[in-house]
Image 1 (spheres, one colour):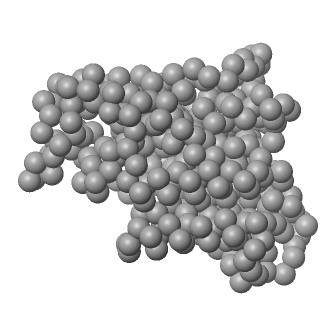
Image 2: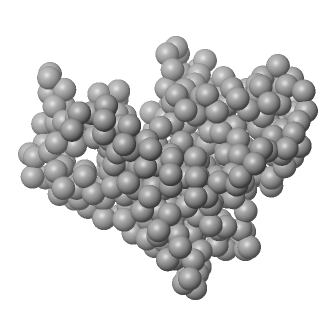
Length: 332
């Protein structure tokens, strides 16, 4: 079967699954944002999400329009922060630009003509989004700019909570939960799991950019340095690298196990969204551990069809887990 046919089949399959969870009928002007300029701002954020966040957008399609739009605004600002950190220019300039983001959120800088901020602040009026979590994201991205490395896993965990746990907490503000206090550490844990997976997926790419995220203690344990040769390949013996990758992947699975306890605390469609995003990354993690050597030589990803299958599975999973009592343990 050709790739185009597979993609079309996957898109149709996903659309059918998503339609099971969407409300029928148009969204009212109040639901859609209503205020002059807000609709345009949300459309701008949704375009950013569609073009730059393919994994994230799969889960968002399962949400009702107001929540989907709100999370697109959250993503758009998070994307801006990440792009500043990864951009060109001297580190001092990038750090200064990161500082300006905090000014935008605390009201000390004008936001009228910033479509992302217009959408985000409207979303924060509608939902209890903890905007202060963006400060954690800024801190984590600033650590990237400064080239920080990590000695212990506890050090790395702190970084993961900043750059990914923050997104989990922001998303939870939109999702809502019966017990936000109990749900928050689980959303944070899921963010840690996703970030460890990202680190393993991008291990070579990050190393070529001069970044090392894995803890120095773990590198020493497996006899690895992550040094690269002139061709951009790791000098460490492949079997040692494979052991290191699988060790870190096991950690990520523990965090996934904890984070997925969040699902019974969410409404059905928010749970399906979360299960889809987590499912895509868990499949990616399985692919990395199945063949670490391949993962260390090329950036792995899932096809459109595979992501659609994950979304369909998530719908089934949510129906199953919502019948179970929630385990509210907050750490692996």
